[in-house]
Length: 220
Image (cartoon, rainbow, N blue to C red; front, side):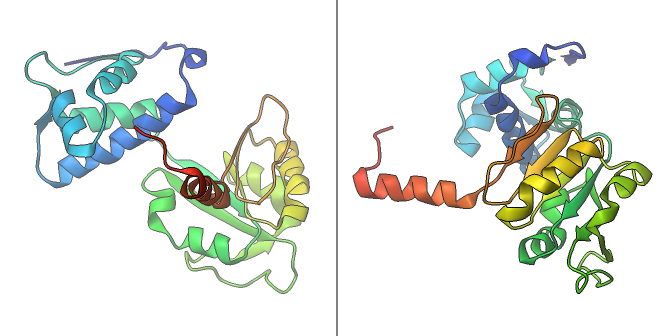
């Protein structure tokens, strides 16, 4: 049974909760691949080293799932999580900055999965324009960003340029009408409050690990 809310308050839900929903989805997909049809929050937590109370609290933001004493129907739970995360429809991406990272992302199926489609690979270097990428796209002129975003219904911009170019590309993405940007450049970029930017810098996590290796790992 599910009473999925469609009118939950986005402002009351933290980024940590949304991140955990993605983790839950991975776990549920793993259960499906194993042929498991029902699971309780306790079983889900025990199998994947999660917190059962946190699972129930996170789900409560979005409705009522499962049957008391029985648990969650795994297939239905996957559908609900995908709907909540907006993965029940296609989202189109454009990547700007066709270097090694962009090529790796384009060739990594789990980066896009079922719900994300790369529809443009752009670069400002004339030597790269016209070359084919691993996913079969042709590298196009970054100067066509606004046109491509409009014509191909792009929703998400991905920045994989050097740090020196990242802010300029971010500004151009904002000007093109994009409201969500994923930034892999090793620099923080600024955008209006109406535009959501997420930056990914793997060195931050490595440096965090180095800190704990140097000063001691905290007790759990």
